[in-house]
Length: 382
Image (cartoon, rainbow, N blue to C red; front, side):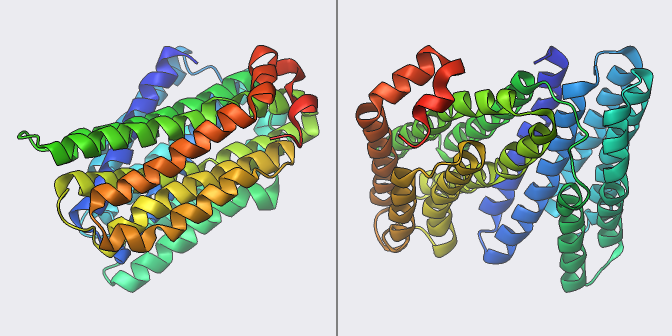
């Protein structure tokens, strides 16, 4: 991880915060749908640069200037994000197209400069779908009718997301440790946004309810962090490192680029619900924040389950049970005191963490002590 990559990723902190703020300002199903579409587009832009800087040096002078330019365009994307389906749709679309075009230009220039025909060929196969999907967001900004605009957004995101599956990613060459580290960092950034939501939701006159909600929130966020970084991230990196060349890039595409998105979306939904809980600690949550509170955590856990299944081929049953429990808590979150609901969700996560730490302690110790030997030893055991 280079300082420039970290600096670039900070722009996406604002994007995640803006999606959360957008949901909190209008907690309706329509806004949730729009927020998830925007998040899917923003996520795909970040992933594009994660793949780029894994193989092309971003610190070369012209590349660095191009990255800064992309950051400027991404800042406009973030600022216009709350009105992307309204009057700032065209500004969002044009700025987003610029971000994606700069990414493609850096990729082609860097691959040619290094005579890297494998990566050059791989990115050129994806380029038409990438640019068509991005261009459609510009078209969406020109459309006034809400239903038509939403339809164009859905088509644009589907084209962009399906392009790597349809045209393949086998030609890309990776540096697995750096790649896994980059995706780990974006999970931390998203979890950090949940902490920002705690601060944004609490008032200046803290009462006991807000303090309790903040403490429950940090416990839940800590458990979400533990679920990924205690063992899963270590084993996944080793699996990616050991994958043969033809399998490595598709594995990275599926387990990181695709299956990290449910985790990111789940964290953003949970952050939104946490913000609403702190704003109204004495009132039951409305149905949308209630679903976001429990469903966001469930979506994160489902992403974890799918990530592990794709990476090492085993099913985490205890996390599947925890997911079902979180979904079952939705009626409670809607009808009961929000502190009770948040406490129930947090307790589910803490109990899951405690179970895995105690019942699977031998496997955990082997993984953490010797990651290079982890795959054969833990497969099918935890």
